[in-house]
Length: 187
Image (cartoon, rainbow, N blue to C red):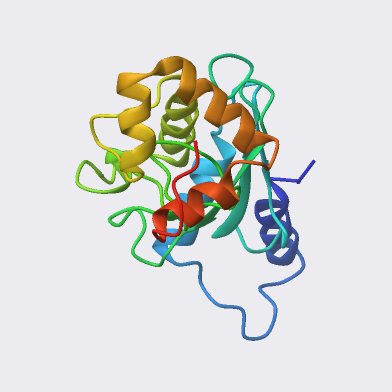
């Protein structure tokens, strides 16, 4: 478990020891806001967050393990890159797990309205996490990045579910990728 309060505690200790370390920089607005967002996280039981560098809160991973729906028992990893424009600009979110999903393409781009046109500075990392979780509970074929998956979801839910299961076992992506390249169309 990451110590979310470690930066605050370290700052207090430095101040009580007679000031800050030599050339310590002041935290940016993005760093202050992301620290607030992380401290106020209320993760669902199906989600976990990890930081490869506990001192870098602007880059982290989110793991979603849905417990219901088409993607039940799957494990999906997302990378978050929070830029210096945060909270005025949304973080960059990529799905690192290959998945057959109407709102996630083969490059891991995610189609979630609050990461694009509906972003507002009042939204938080928690809002994004719940939005991503919802995509696995209710995939949205009306606003797809993967048009083929959206079409199958709308026209043949049973086939869509089979394709999702096959993709979670690692067997569908190669054929799907080949279909996108026009080499074959295997369903």
